[in-house]
Amino acid sequence: MRSLVILGCLGVFAGPVAAQPANKTDFATERTRPAYDVTVTPVTDLSHTGPSYTPKMLLKMRECDLAELYRRSPPAPVPCGFAPGLMINKPGSMFTSVLARGVQCSAWQGKYFPGDGMMYNVTFGVPTVRTTIYPGESWFDGGPSLIFDYEETSLLFPRCRDEVREVCPGVYLGILHKRTKKGPKLWTWFVLDTRPRDCGEQLKK
Image 1: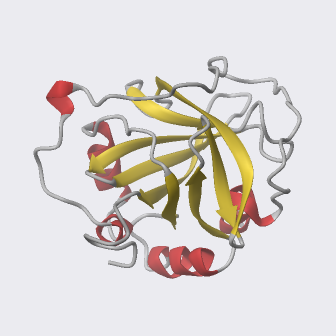
Image 2 (image 1 turned 120 degrees about the vertical axis):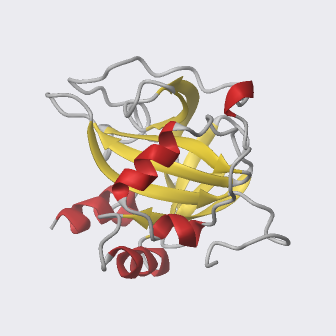
Image 3 (image 1 turned 45 degrees about the horizontal axis):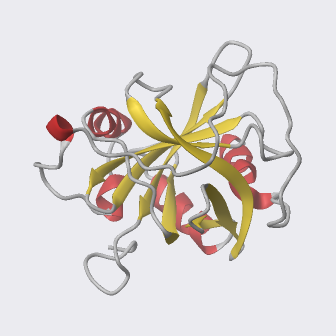
């Protein structure tokens, strides 16, 4: 059942691309930042010096390994255009890859960045469910991250909030949180591939 709920959160019931009215929630650890001129510069001592990772590699990792990789990675810069994505639900289980490919072929294909300070989830091949983008504090470890916040822009998912870091050039590891009365709850992990489509490893590799 948890997987079905996550699918819904990723866009099964997504609305049209049109702007959605603001909807406040009864819990939030910080206010939404204005969506303009968003650029996150990686911290110097967190620059990429380790091994390269592909989306397929992240899909096979255990949750403890994903957590450690996320903690030592710098905040991601805002990409441009379409970034294919994979959901990493129940990391390390025998169902993780199967579920990720199933979602990719149906409900959620990734995220689209038009360059206007907003982000749209691509569901069923269509940009839907928009979020604001801003640099902010991670709800996972308190460090700097790039935030995609649904609180001000989505009627269906105002309690959801994404955060992403760049684990190696062009490969982003993300966490989907849900706001609850007891605090943020980690729902699932995901990966985005922002590498040029005409070179390097592709999402399926």
